[in-house]
Each structure stands twice: as structure tokens, then as C-alpha cells.
Amino acid sequence: VVVVPSRHFGEYLATMCGLIRRSGAHEPTVGVALLRLLDITADVARNDGQRLREIGDQARLVASATEREVPEPADRGPVLDAERALLRKIESCRPEAS
Image (tube, rainbow, N blue to C red; front, side, top):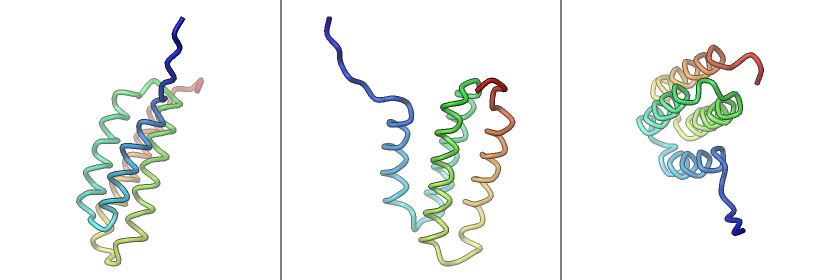
């Protein structure tokens, strides 16, 4: 038997989102695009409570980076709106028994 360690969904998600988030935190369009990607991912994971939590965690990190790096409130708005919409979606998708 050969055992090959593998990463879990959350680890892949954190790696991918983290690289993009850190590199593009100063640019709101990057945050919005990343949140759109997470939104699509939430559609696919809508029956998996653990994955939805991990997607929500990444959405919060995107919003936090935007709040920290983007000085103009009008520029931050679309990112924060997208984060709130995604978190509402996640909450409505979350399976009861997760």
C-alpha cells in the first residue's frame, strides 16, 4: 500500500485565494473577481457545510484585505457588497446537519 498525502479542499482554497488576495489586495476589481470565483464555488459546494464554511472564511479574508489596503470607501464598496451577498448565499445554502 502506498499512501500519498494530499491536501484537503480548504488547503487548496486557502493557497489559491491567498496568493491572489495578497497580490491584488490593493485593487478592488481583483477582490470582486475573487469573490465571484468563490460564489461559483459555493454553488458547487452548496450541500457541503464544511466547504461552505471554508469558502466563507476566504470571503471574509478578501473583504478584510480590501478594507486594509483600499483607502477610498467608494472603491471598497463593490468588494464588501459582494462579500455580504456571498455570505448570505452561503447561509441560505448551508445544510441543516452540517
